[in-house]
Length: 182
Image (cartoon, rainbow, N blue to C red; front, side):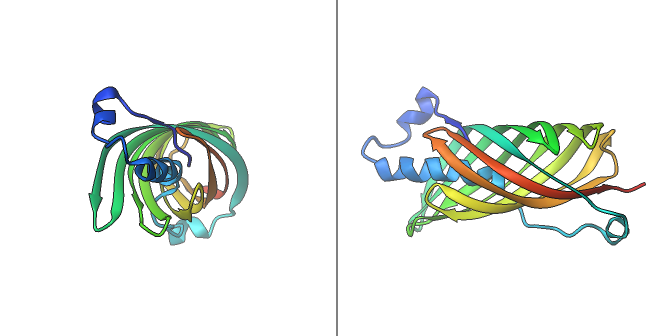
């Protein structure tokens, strides 16, 4: 959903000092990374059930694993930790890839495990996301399933909007629809 990036000294040396544009792209990419993965429809058996809806906000911090360049694009692989409030209350730990294009646009996708509470039930669920955008803002879709504990049988899908708030931080909002199948 959003990104915070921390570069370790060894990683910082791998980024040329004169590459200010690469850092700008990196900041944008990391903010969008949590927004990732293609929007999937609920399974037919789940879509027959009544959907609940909710919304909330998130704050993200991340760490760059690698940066590489290909055909004018900057490709960032990173991990992230998100704190979510609202319909999803808990923490999501994810990894993914963000691609920054020469025209200032980006695309991103990630997958991670959310651990927390949804609709009064506590457990874990896999949530994937996909996003695209320009500059420091974007839009994306999320889907979630494969829950455990109290989140077993949970299916969710929705949208999110990240905003980069600093060189290594991002915040945003999300809206979801969800149901629990038996």
